[in-house]
Length: 373
Image (cartoon, rainbow, N blue to C red):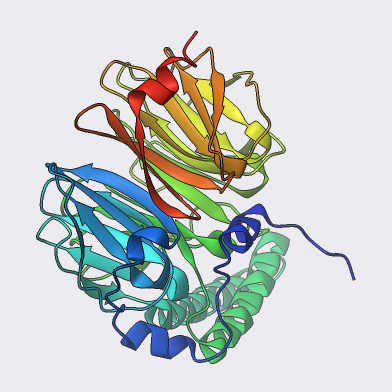
């Protein structure tokens, strides 16, 4: 049997947080435990929300750090790994994670409620697959010699079997990223090609079937751009683009052999893609064309942030932090403990918040300034 190395799952191994096989539903029903050590547990994503830094991580942990440095842990209704978050303003935000969970906050991250989970995703997938079979059976009966329809019907039968197996297995589809255009419309992406869309703030979700991904490669990152287009990046270096808000998608483009983990739009409009093996690509035309950027390290890259002065920070494997004044020339700084870094964000008083396997670390800007060219 051929073994397939899947970098998205390798990242979870790195954190020591692969999904548990036993009692997955319990984690969806059990609130996250409040603990004074939450800031030392693995953290996966962060965002500045007003004057607070909001961070998510393992065991349903959501941490808030205010401008004065006070840390507090939010009440969260699930006890499982959260992988990403996105706030559209100082009030409304969403977080996603294992077991297909989607959480929503309407108070800047102070409190959260569950909107959707893997159980609901399983039913959604089965309903969609059964509707596809019914539609294609009718079309195939009207055109029995159409080989394309026959092949599509075979794929739909497989999708039904797969969806039924997924329902029986329980909530087993990790979600890996989330992005909202406003307080109503947003997308989540995840393992095995999962992509969902909402137009009512997450009250209901629809499966997006128009993205061509027959191998069901993991979708790791989603980002909307100023021109209204939508980008989705993931396993195998694939990039998918929609110019009509996700209604239709261009054929997926393999930009690199390395899996891609993060999309970021800079203040000057450039878009960056980063990922496995030190992959970094830049686009100056809103994702239409891409150019690789050479780096002084081949460490896997997981997170990125641009500071107010325009300098860029990339966080990655082995405690790697790459620093650049312009997004083109980089130097490397490495954390002494070499623990994986998954994200970085600026703080007041010339400090940086760095998160990863060992939780939250605070660094002075002076540590990095000597690395700038």
